[in-house]
Length: 107
Image (cartoon, rainbow, N blue to C red; front, side, top):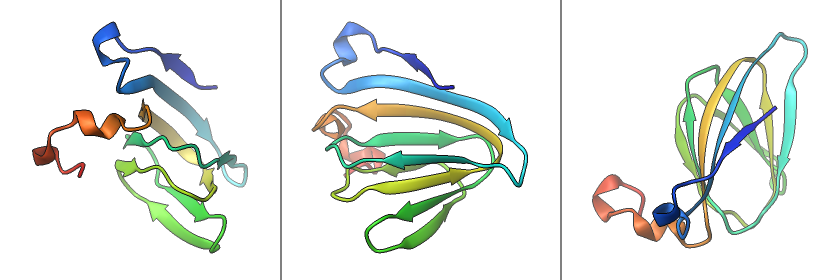
C-alpha cells in the first residue's frame, strides 16, 4: 500500500526514506496502523482527509487536520484513517532533525 523511495546519497545520514500513501477508504471501513516507538521522527504532509492519532499509553486522541512533525516518542501510537488518504512522509534517521536549521521551526 505504501510506496517507498530512498534519498540521494548526501541525504542518507539524515533521511531514512520518503513514503507515500494514496488511497480512498469509504466509511465505515478504515485503515488502522500501529506505530511503534523507534527513535525516529516523520515529517507528515497531509493532502487528504484528517486522521485520528491515539496515544496508546494514555488513551488520548488527537485529530490531525494538517501536516505535522511526528517526533520520536517513547510510546506506541495508533493511526485511524478513512476518506481520501493522501500522505507524503519523510522518515528521519535518529538525530536526523539536527540537519534542519533552527529557523525552520523544527527545534
